[in-house]
Structure formats: structure tokens, C-alpha cells
Image (cartoon, rainbow, N blue to C red; front, side, top):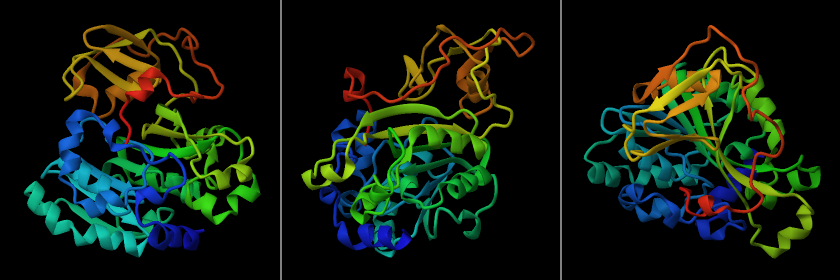
Length: 347
């Protein structure tokens, strides 16, 4: 599988226009405040972008960030501007051709930004322990449509958990299926390269994340994918695929379910570019100044992470009221884009 992916992304694909699905988002959907930062990135880097989501979480100034499967470096150079000169962004990729593009334009970006705070490492995202990276040394780890390409996703998540600081998060976009992908799809090199063959059934992903210590994965955004190459349709049958962004907090002691302790938070409106509302995930849209009831896990995600200074916290864990209302199962994705999603951040 490594050889298949290296060939597909190193030699067969020359630009994002060569992709055969709608996974790669239109940059026009990026938030307005990020567009000037995107404009600072070299065109050769932008042309080889193969991501499926926007992996720019809040409050990155001064953070140390790791990008798994960094490719030509678009997200690395975008995040480099967000972490600033006091932060650092490290990109890991296994494809020589992609790394060559990223490295070739380091001086260009140093001059554009006024500082050099990035570095690129060749390696496999399943073998992060072999790259000389210190355990618990990253505030945020990101990945953009790459985990599905890995033949050992459990090893990827184990490596992520090892490298994240307590309270840090894995904020990443990937492709998921509405059921388990059959072997005929998994073994097709084009479908695998297009991020479909290696896509996990969404519920298998949730169980895998929990086994690797990420007890309460939070879905941030999602959208259905269209297969734009008609030759691929007969191979896929009734399979449906989704691009989804999750955030996984590295916190010990999170509970399997959303338990109610009578807690609430009040958002101060102080996170940059979020003056009126902060969106933690798809089900937590927290308005400024409004008392917002939360489960114990959400309370801890906000209180024990870099987000804490921007919230007031009400309550504690001294009294338990049972399962938090609205905690349920079922397909978490929307089958068609909603009005909100059509205008949502995605790139």
C-alpha cells in the first residue's frame, strides 16, 4: 500500500485537478480571514494540494504543530503563519516528490513570512516513534485526507496519542464510508489512491479511536463526496463516502458517554475571529455571554485545553444527573449538504 500511495501521489497526480472525486475542496469556501494567508503560499505548493478539509483549529499562536502526510506543504505553510515566529510546524511525509516541492520553497516562504518556523521529515505516519520526536511535545497534530491511506491506522493513532501534550488535540479531516468497504474496493489502486479504498466505516473509526485512548471523538464538520469519474461508479455499488473533520482531545479520564453533572460554560467572545459564537463541534455552538449547559466531557475539553482562558466554568463533578440529554447513536453525517455546510469553512 505504501508503494501504491507513493506512486499515485508522487508520479500519477500532477495537481489537484487530476483527482476523480469531490474530496478536494474549493479554496473559495475558506473563511475570508484565512484567504490572505493562503495567498502568501507559493503556487507550486498550492497546485499539489490533495486535502479534503480545513485543518486550522483555533488559538494556534505560539503552538507546536505536527502535520501527518504533509505532502507539498500547503497546510504546513498555512499553519506556519498562524503559529507565528514563536511556534513551529513539522511536516511528515513519505513521498520524495512531494517533499521536494515543499523543501524547494522554504526560502520563498521565509521571505514572505519574515521567519522560518517549519521543517519537513521523511517518514511513515505509522512509525512516528522513529522520527526522533519527543513524546508529549505537540500542542496540536493535524492531518488532511491521509489517515485513510495508512495500512495501520491503529499505529497512527497510537503515535499521535504518544506525541500530544496533555490537553492537546488531533484535529484532522479524512474520508469515511457508511459501511465497511469490501475487499474489491480496498484492492483497487485508483480507488485506494483516491482515498476511498482505505476509508474506514465511520463506526469502526470511532471504536478504534476509543481503543487508542481518544474516548470521546468530536465531529466538527462533514459533507458527502461525489464520485466525479463515471468509470468508478460501477466499482462502488451502494457505498457512500463522506469527508469529515474530527477533533480528538488527549485527556485522561473522559467517559464513554455524555454524563450530566449539571455543569455549564459561558463563552467570553475572546477567541480571534469568533466574537459572537464558538463552535467546538457539530453539536456545540456556544454563543458569547450565554450560559451553555454541557456534559462532563465537554466541560473538561474546554477547561483542560488551550481554550480554557476564553470561558467561565460553572459547576463541578460533585453531583451526577445521569446521561446527558441528546446523547445517542446512528450515522453522524448529513446525507446532503445543508445550507450551513454550503457556506461553512472547507478547503
